[in-house]
Image 1 (cartoon, helix red, strand yellow):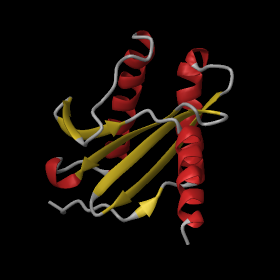
Image 2: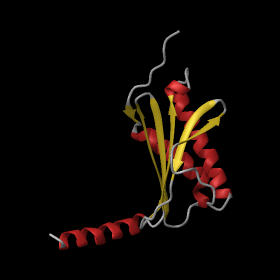
Image 3: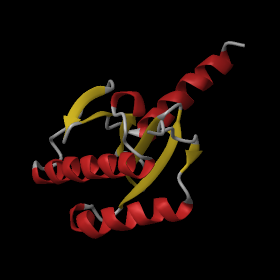
Length: 147
């Protein structure tokens, strides 16, 4: 039997576009008027990563939901299989997230979830990027005043 290895690579634009289209088809009615969803995916060091970013226009709501599936904990899983496991997990999570009025969250630190025999990791944290940038600007101007 051939040993399965995953090549380090970013997902192709058409792969990302397809994931975003499927997500929007399923969950568009749950998004607020100024919200959008962006996907990012890549393989690195024998791990597949997919991040879903749910954010509003001014980034006062910024929620990166990160997922990962390592090959060493899921032997025999192909690249396509890894993507499918993560996308199914993301779909199930967001079904619950929206059904619970956005009150269901994963921990901030990587946490193991066993799903259909696969070991999947996820983490996420809602932040207010606009407020963070304002705070950084204030701190930056305070630092420059001391020089």
